[in-house]
Image (tube, rainbow, N blue to C red; front, side, top):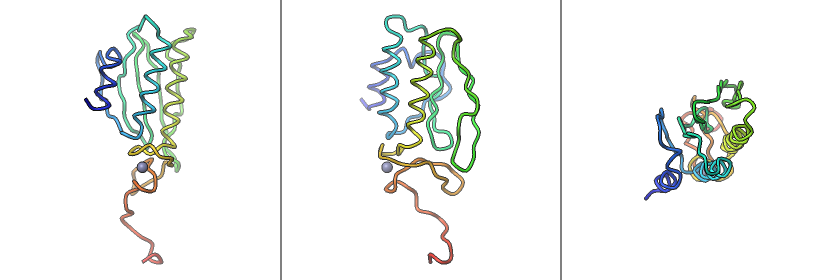
Length: 152
Ligand SMILES: [Zn+2]
């Protein structure tokens, strides 16, 4: 089994129900796994229909979207010279302390992917590469296609 398959077997309920797309980057997998473990602890016996709806990279960092029963968050991103940031994040469910704790776990996990190489997990920064934002360490940064004349 791949590490992703192991995770999906261990927390099967998190990967059931309808989802848009689930894509995983190896360097961020430990962060995602830790979030799954923490959420599982918060939920306890009653999983409340929690499941991942979309896991993806956006503007060089990870986005982990989920449903808790019929509740979900609204997340609006904007992008600037430092990559993408969440501009608006609503709470998954007002007045629900477990939902608030899950929101905080996911916020923390997403924030960690801003400084973690998506390929290997080493320390990294989100930077633009030829129009794309990537969070990669020096070893995994793509070669720059264009160089300034003074570098040649
Ligand atoms: Zn790396």
